Length: 485
Image 1 (cartoon, rainbow, N blue to C red):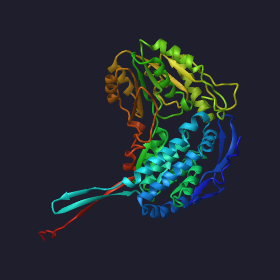
Image 2: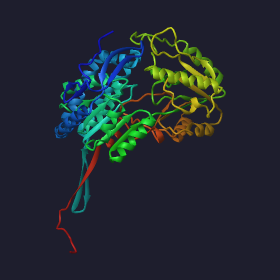
Image 3: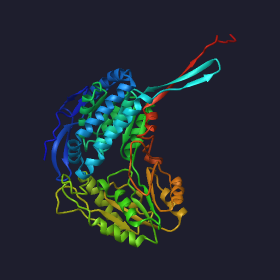
Image 4: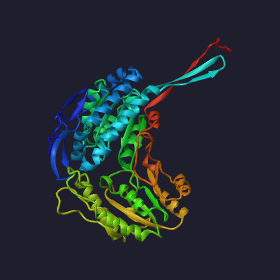
């Protein structure tokens, strides 16, 4: 196993920085349960260094031409692609996700974001508004210092998803990774500086919730972007709101995946697999409530169980492995607890349901329950593990109402060969991101985000520009001022 010990815990002003007075954060490899590195949580001194550095750098970066800003981001994207394998191995060690996944879904998607927003930078212009002799022109300006707070499931991708639009618009960024997966963002910071980003424009500080709280509440911070759970999001949103800061929240979900009886069953099962088992089920947008039409339910359950049995579970560094462990022991216990609740509440287990005892680390079998009802705990609460709930339905309007009966509104999906029905159904789903005849694809060109308790704002696409910049209007008078006084 490669040595992944970072040079220091934090990356500030273009350099690694350490302060061992901060609490120790153990980096545990989920496949073995063993500590592979450690970092220190940021002290108040580290937080102050990061903020001061970011404010100073932002003044320089905001005056850099948009074309040059774009070049820096595109160079960073090229570097990430060149180093994809080493970054993917680090992601696997940080998260436990199999290398088969990380090679194609993590650093590469981060590079896509940097490339996309790099190409967009020079297009961020204002408009001219004629008013007879007078006129107004608008300017799009950066917000200032932005704070990004990451989740542990996609540490490299999230570090880039928050950096790319912020830097494109001329902001600086302080990124706090999850304390569970602290390593990957440090490498992204290194690459950005190597690509030509001014020192201090992208700082990384480690820490628990108190560090995030110190950043979110600092009056010098203009914007907060969080990817995380709904409970954490409520706290961060309230704290940021007290300071009237710009906020983007990408939170959790309990998303519906609706499979009609005319759907291609094998294709629908593939979608359900991606919506529940990819990354060991640790994806916020997962379609964990799978509504299957009664006419095909038995066949669907039979084939899902058969295909689940073929999933190769094992060493995440082996490229033949399909599924790795969940991220840590706490998550393992949470997932196993929900499985037991599902059994007790009367759901029928069709596959999985157990910890994999003959492996070190935090492995759970791919698990699916049938005969799940809307009021069961496993159909109401976000599990964040490889646990799928199958619910029966017969009527289109009935299933739409049931799909929307949740506090969440992140995602939704429909499988049907009737394209008219597909569009009709997704138009009625209360969700920010939907798929037809596929699931969980998130290209940077498309907006991503949720509604209701699943968040506010959007990441990716041109929509993200609105969340990392603001418009200034300038009225230009070409005639003498009229005044009654």
